[in-house]
Image 1 (tube, rainbow, N blue to C red):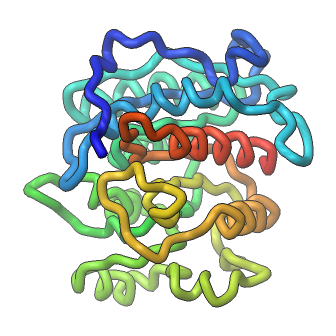
Image 2: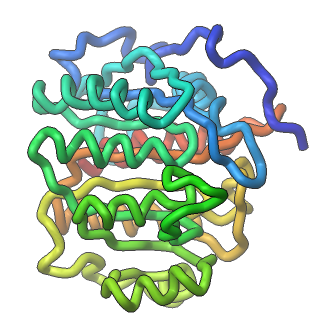
Length: 289
């Protein structure tokens, strides 16, 4: 299967659900979609730079009723995509977009791009006086201090969160380095790995002392490859669709989600269901919020 090879800079990025709800002003939208097609440090399969565009295109096929309600009635605004050649420039652009969103008391929804974009989101939330707990759905721990000589690799995202002084909780992990196993013990990082979630999803997921406001970061490789093949570093034994929804629904009832992202989609040519799955997951989370 071939990943897409397109000029994502020149592409026309539609708004999320544009065919159904048209273009909504930022003031009248509770959810602000921020496409971030950044790809610099992927280490196996590439193509994450095409993820945001394909998710937005797939969103045109969504129905506005999510099975419970119509989240689009709250308004969904889509920013112009953010392009940058390095993480420093990227974080500046992200901070501008996220800061505008937070000052309007809206919910930022980041579409990656590689997982490094999440660090830009953490940075911006903290600049705006927020210190959310970070809840991560992912196949990998992403706790390396450096990877391939970069501290801003997709494999270092959660270590940067720790360096910012943020509490983290990991869900669905099933691939770790020895260093990451030890760091979990050293930092007393809380987690429910994939094999535990496969046996049982607990009634209460997050610790009582975890921050009341949370930022949810979802690497699509947290899902099982049978329902999410379009990612650069797939791992067997991941979360299935209804497991994922149940986990996020419980989290959304326990704490307040103030922002979230979905990252690491690497679209495969002529295989459309993974980007639709991402679009649907985003919309379901909106409904839960």
